[in-house]
Image 1: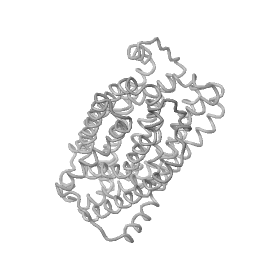
Image 2 (image 1 turned 180 degrees about the horizontal axis):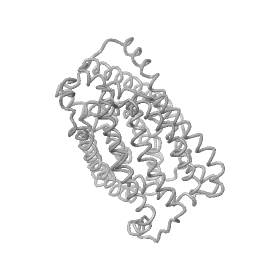
Image 3 (image 1 turned 60 degrees about the vertical axis):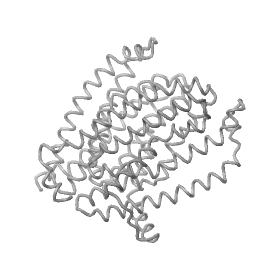
Image 4 (image 1 turned 135 degrees about the vertical axis):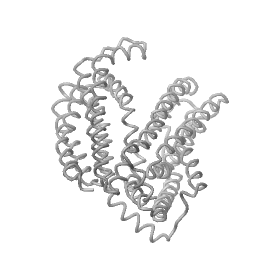
Length: 447
């Protein structure tokens, strides 16, 4: 595969696999939004307020479960790309098998621990359930949800394999299929008036369905096969990867805190009413960023491939174009967020919404920082394997946010929270630029 890649990676093919994956990724995100638009009112009407609230509470656990991968899921990406680029397919399959078996063992332990612990917990008291049907379903619904969340430790590994082969479109296609299977299951469950545990299985099953279908294809096409050298070799491999994985875990932890703390701090100082506009603008910004968000995983894979092939000119070309287009798109996004977002929300929500300019303007800057510094240069740093430095930058951003929010949020609520995030990005930007410059740009002619 390495010789093939070197022959095929010419000027016209730099963005080919990236755009193909991103194109299907955009469709995928739109389908996901469509599925939520259909299922949320449907489930709220069918389940009622209490059981729907129960499901929403259970679903919030999923983000914390992913910390149990210890950053290994991200740490193996660069290694797999390197193996596939150098024609070391057997070594790649051994790494995948070791990681999958390790997480399979982890999932089994977690399931056994859940079976032991769950009956000892008074879930009715924790969730303050009143209806008999909710009390009857809470234990089984929670157990099924937890199993599905645990299984994501395995499915996330499988879904990353095509990206490391520069075939991210394959992953996005199967996630799209998983979304449609989930939608079909939810609609069937509501139509047949089935229980909440049945619905939870399909509500949480998108990634598992996608991974199961994908691994079957990879095995059938002989892209992946089991390669096993024993338990000792597996743990040795896991210990080695976990050293890099710790840096990713640090990044994930800092990133999650940076995204969740603003809401918590706003509520603690000003009450829940003060977070409404912040929440709305956050959702709008996330939607606006979709065209570039879907580029990050295939961009990471392509940049790391070029780094392995020592194609600095190709890396420079991609990053230069990415930053240029991200800047231009950020200008358009800023115009929308500053001048048009109130009109759009009024039409979509059928309510008179008036988000003040003092909040819209910093959100526009935050959007640009995320697209350029996070999506482009941050992705490049991870693709180059500079995980220790990126972890340090992530922690620095979190510290800056905490310091500035201490002064700004009590005075300015949501506006203060956004400016705190903007300051965190802005102050870290020179370090990111210097890191990228020293690693790539200053030596871009040394191929």
